[in-house]
Image (cartoon, rainbow, N blue to C red; front, side, top):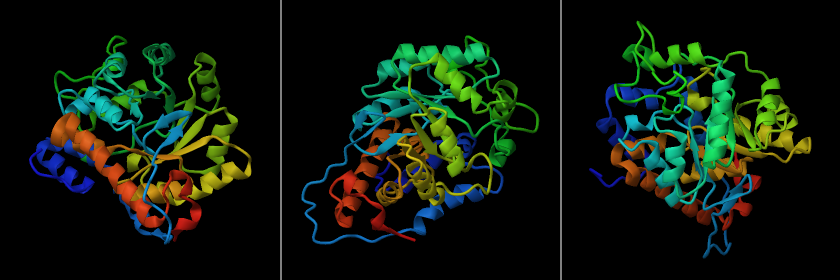
Length: 362
């Protein structure tokens, strides 16, 4: 590591120096004016913590479970694409870092390393994030491979019928450099993300190969072809959360795709409590996860208090990979875990179960 980072923002600064402009902008950017990208962060500043005092916090316990899987902390590694843009070992390094942190890595369909290699490198649980391709046989093949490799769940992304217009990528004419590909789809002929005139190569890839006709009926189809629990990722409305529960999802991720899809969509922290409350009011006990803008331990604490079982962290892990490979990603996760531990102690919440709604004020 070129410096000794003391915050996740320090890792971002290091990553910006280490990455090409094209790669940095791809990881960092959002859709259009990037309003939602900024709001995902700003939402945490609108919430304060009403800490308890004179609570015995000499021992803290950050452990919890997600879909019955014990984890060392309520922080998971979000699905993000193309890790080999950040470090040669790519997703294999990420899997090892997540395992060292005692948590789940969610592997993207758009991985630059194949499912089997990532699971083989992992010392902890791997879930598989699924995009549904127009070629349903190819999609079913991904599901079968994820099952056979030992993935613990499928995370179905539902907020990307087309790709949001990410203007940084358009300006950079983003594509994958030679030697990198969508490794999980190479055999099917869907591995290359090529440059296109006056646009993002990834946008062209998504519009060509992914299925924009996806509906709630397809959740039933997915359940019919797998025994794995299904988590629906991309929910920002209570009624859609209820539909996911009624469709048999084991969980949801409250997510706006990191501000990369529909710009001016609401910040995830803002909609999280109404979604959690709607599910509880209707008696649904599916697990609620959340991503979007998590950069501090206090952010995690606020998300838990407002109804999340755990949070997903994406960009900071990429910053860690770019700054220091596997060790950089591991340090990002350790730093965030240590910040959460401190925040829980200072808030008078020695266990995750003690992080309740009364800790937060708007």
